[in-house]
Image 1 (cartoon, rainbow, N blue to C red):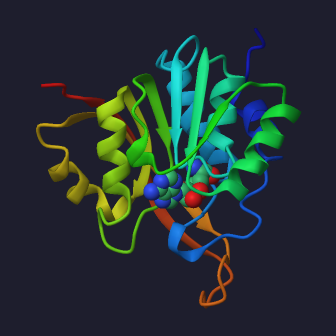
Image 2 (image 1 turned 135 degrees about the vertical axis):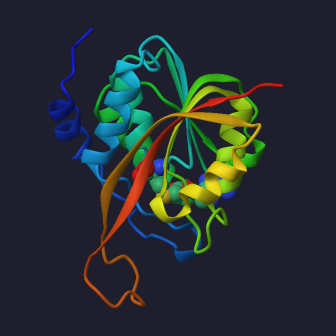
Length: 203
Ligand code: SAH
């Protein structure tokens, strides 16, 4: 098994392209490689990746799913509604020599129990609008969840998690949004996001 430094992982994941034709309503912002490496390396150090069954909900072109497989997950699922994104993801998993089971469909229909979910869900334009269904699904199927959210939504998410999950790590990070759609007025915009590690409270 190769040992991966965070930098080596980042450089490898850097090759995976974002969605070729992003659609506004699916909020297809690919995770930049440094942030993907930050999440995956952190999860690896917690012992939540190597030898574990991992799912990436809303996997897009697969950066988190493929990264989890590179770090030694025993099995990886990547779920997305967008088949064009999944085609790109499959090509890159093959090129990087890892096996990921990509599933075309809505995350709400995903019912396989896994050890770990890694996800960068759509944030939505109101707190919880886009990401809460992803978070709820992740808490249902996983033993532990690593997830990115808009930092502005944190207090809303904390309230939503009451009785459902316990945040055991939070790290604020800058996320540079590329100019993805014609209605964007600035070339780039930086927002603050939070990386959360959440342990579901099963009751
Ligand atoms: N996780 C990827 C993509 C993030 S963008 C990355 O980190 O780069 C969010 C992704 O969620 C998009 O690929 C979009 O197609 C997908 N998505 C949005 N709503 C979905 C749903 N209901 N079910 C499955 N995938 C969905």
